[in-house]
Image 1 (cartoon, helix red, strand yellow):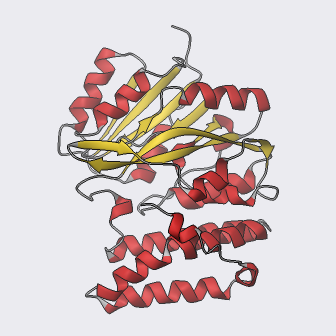
Image 2 (image 1 turned 90 degrees about the horizontal axis):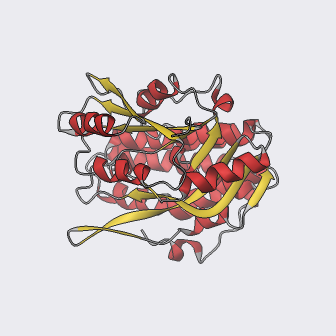
Length: 313
């Protein structure tokens, strides 16, 4: 087999039910020149055993084991420290790559010379005894469709909606001096905006790269916003991402982010706040909304009345 050209960092904690599918999605890639660093972040179930079995069956897998959980940011950073391939990407251990994801991403970035390439993604939603893939959501379509090669955040401000780590493949050199925040949730949002503002050029493609799992038991971080600490991390990430864009002078991207947050995030948060037993929750949500209104770019927002209705979570 040829030497690997891309490393996938695959963190996971207590994902024994989902890790086999993530591993299988790597093994069926049409581009075989990959290696994967599986990071067991302090699991107390069989995740570590599943990861170790993968390494025994396929030399392209290696494992990092954390005795205690450190969080996604620390797990990804541990993997980044070991990357020695030209390209690097991320796949959460409860998600799945589409079969030609790596081939499409690598072909694109090799042809363009951009710093990174970002693709589309869909939700895997519980259905019966399994999961079924949904459609590409409107904000993801706006960020990735049509294909744009060697673009930037000023020419394509809607790209700022694609804030997840695992929808992108980067040149490893682009990560020099860049790491994920540790000890917080939603650690990828600020990093994503820094990627957009630091890049000399990036590519976006409409192809679905990842199937992102909405767990039936509601145990993922993105399904835990009713918890006050998670809410605080979430709002801090949203604020921080906006500030990164503002500091770079990407004001159209700031407007796009605020518009999307109003359409996508505020109504669910306000619904939780209305029934939350702790009044501090509602106060934090209200304070965040006031912060959004205080940004000068707020005046440039022209809400799309159809956007909220189009969100099909």
